[in-house]
Image (cartoon, rainbow, N blue to C red; front, side, top):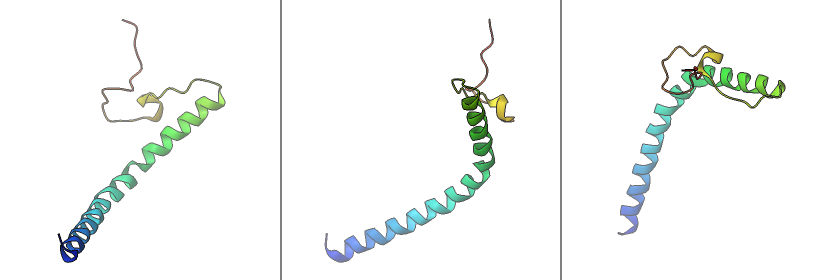
Length: 74
């Protein structure tokens, strides 16, 4: 590979990184509210001297999850 081919590859990778950022930034903004709620729940548990455990109901997560549900006695 000569210098011009390598330059072209770098330009293509730069464009693709930009596309990735355009996809990820809106998703980060959408999820930021959920992240803030989870952080507040964590900090409350730390202040109460508990071992912090995440449960989706503690932050009113509306989506159904496969994990993070409180275990029930069966």
